[in-house]
Length: 85
Image 1 (cartoon, one colour):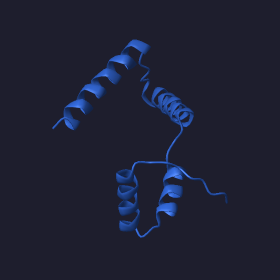
Image 2 (cartoon, rainbow, N blue to C red):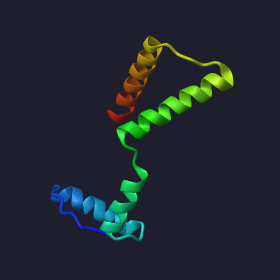
Image 3 (cartoon, one colour):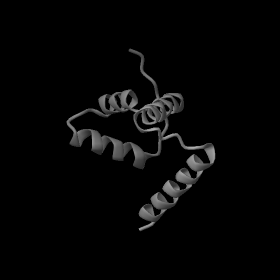
């Protein structure tokens, strides 16, 4: 296993270390676990396509590109509402 040095703001390092400690992990172990659980953009796109195919096969749901954009915009609007509270 190779080591890597990264530069992050001290506040971010302290926050990550506190989260790791609360879970009984070292910062190194926590970051390794985090890296294993996060998806790359390509992996997210692949999962989205699989989900769309499953929905289409299950109940015929197959939104157009315009409908997907409308739904994405609505989700963004709702997330902005929640995060601005």
